[in-house]
Amino acid sequence: MDILRFKGLFKEKYSERSEQGPVQYFFSPGRVNLIGEHIDYNGGYVFPAALSLGIYGALRFRADRFIQLKSTNASQSVTINLAEPIVYKPEDGWANYPKGVIKQLLDDGHLLKGCDILFSGDLPDGAGLSSSAALLVLVTFMLRYADGERDIDKVAIAKFTQKVENQFIGVNCGIMDQFAVAMGKKDVAILLDCNTLHYKYTPFALGEYSLVIMNTNKKRELAESKYNERRDECEQVVDIIKKHRQVESLCQVSMSEIDKYVENDVLRRRASHVISENNRVRLAVELLDKGDIVGFANLMTQSHNSLKTDYEVTGVELDCIVENALLAKGCIGARMTGAGFGGCAIALVATCNIEQFKVVVAQEYQKTTGLLPDFYVASIVDGVRLLDVKN
Ligand code: GLA
Image (cartoon, rainbow, N blue to C red; front, side):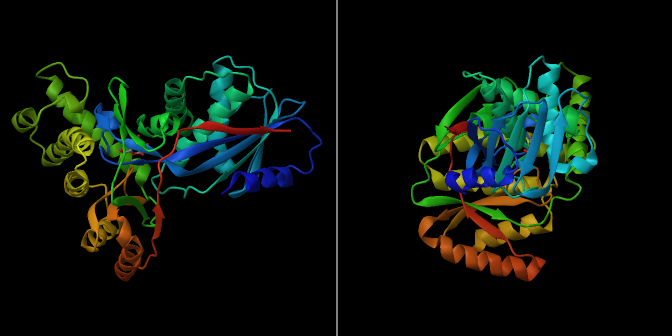
């Protein structure tokens, strides 16, 4: 969507309001994780980037102490009275995300003013591209910027919004998504050590190849319960190792320790994914730095196989789209991205083959699953930011 259209939508959606003050416009990207899946909560390395698909936000102050939340993507709007307690309500749907941010900002002592807010996004929901992190980071940034803060610490925003997602929304996610959305940079990916939050930007230069995002259009089912189950299994492994030596997270454990101390086959396979994936991230970034795109793409495919066989978070649709992508001309590597259980996969495809790639993969995928996929050729952009202020 272009910003001019969004400005028109704000006027339209708030045409009944008499406020005349300036409107501030913001953008928050989605994220794609290139490699390093189910690693953030295990204290290892991830390699995400911020996407040009994302969510726009507009804000105008009002004279009273109400915050009105509207979205062009949903019919339901929600109004919050800042003088009353803010609680999670299932019937408020998407608006629980901004509500969680507002509650936490108030709890932290921020004095919020009333305002009218509009959101509009082109990020598919529940597709593994972090629409929830994009919304949480956007609202936090908007409210703090509008309150006069300028040098906003974006790492602090990532930690703050992870806390909101964990505590108010009740999803036990790691820090990767919020970090990528807040700290993303144009044309580079972020090598993030989730244990220390040290990070390094790495140019994501693909030469003759492009990054294609493939949406299976299979909604992530059971994603939350399975996600928490995997987290729990990883913690069980750490607890076993802790009987032998001091260790904080699974990424600090070696495969030989797993072989020696962990008897349960399921737990061994979960650990094997985590330890091998963490190694793949470091190797993948080294290869990318050297310009070895084919080597990088091979590791992406290995990552998918490990997520399929050992971590078991892919499912029929993700496996089918990745298998067909790998068979298509010009594709050098493919994998699921995000939590799994549906959602999106990514592929590196020779730019000259992309059109044919989409046709062939869609045909084969539909034959097997009955679903039509969507494709996005992504560019990598800056993290959350102010776009414009207009009277
Ligand atoms: C979801 C979570 C992240 C991360 C990924 C898997 O996107 O929000 O914290 O764990 O799954 O890598």
